[in-house]
Image (cartoon, rainbow, N blue to C red):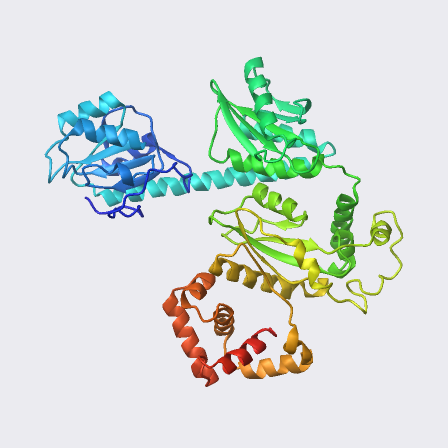
Length: 535
């Protein structure tokens, strides 16, 4: 019963210092739900009845404290148990949620001293019968977590749909606040930076929690540099939270609820994005242009025709972004990144761990922007140089200098690209992001072909590339391109492609065989790089 039941920190010779417990991958599981699984035969024999389980961990160490994150159900057969009082004290100090003690073959029954220690120090103690392996307990916990996660995702999805529907009402801001208050079972208030109430919905809260909520809102109000984007607090039994809205108005969404569930932050984040858009001045050129572009595309216009309404007449930069710490980005975080880069065109909703994508428009002349706003005449042909025009071409590379590294993010950006070539720019931005992650750089920008390579006519270069690379499949060509871009480094290429280094070696070896070329030869590498850059 003492094999590991789930991935755990290595119990090596250098124990890590106890960090702050990271957020769980799924909602916590109430201890009562685990005990309700009759097939396990678990029985609580000491300690409180209520606890929330975040992890499962098996250890027979005399002191597992250095290897606990907090919130674990620790499973043990008591192989090295000598001082139950000290052992339980260390578990409580580490933040363990409960202790599961397996009887036999080490102990015929749960030691009485251990039962007393758990009762005295408030740690739930479960008796694990001999016929129940620890692995079965871990599987049950993970199953319960998966079910809880599914329930949370369904709840968040329903909330997102309800909030989006509310945002489409004639009175969108009060409607979103009303729906948010209903979803969270509390009160939602839109406040100014000075704490003045703009709109509110939901049941009123007593004066003291209301005052605490106003003070919390001032913490995130963007009246000074460095203000946090969100903050949480509690006042008695009332859970408080505040979120700064995007834009220069300094508005804050403040929430108060009697309970706090794991999906509440996600639901609030959706509301923050909607309210940031809804509370912004509706008659600004940017907002009006985005609205007109959406309407025209739904009515059949091409991307080239609506691109000027979104802020560019010649070029666009595609950006792919991932959080540096590997955590997924929610809509609020992605929206903040877009604001930092100066664009509202953010795609953060694809899921599956994919990168956040952003479109950064090039500059638009003021007279052209005024002409393209709703209400202006649009029958005139686009000026030469605009997307879809006969002279369309990317702006100079200085436009890409607008993309700067962002704290907490790894970015990959394409070169400025005409709207008709955004598909290719999207692929180039993805490659640039993979290169940045492999080299641990905060930003990588794909540069257009220049120098000697630019002297070859594009048609001839493309034909030569097709002939040279014809033996390679798409995965092999992508691997070769990535490997060459990283100067033949196996480990970095493996990181960029998300595969094992031996897989990279096998693919590169296969490329050499198919091309009948020595990939260690610098001339061969240079010619292949020239060809790969054409795709």
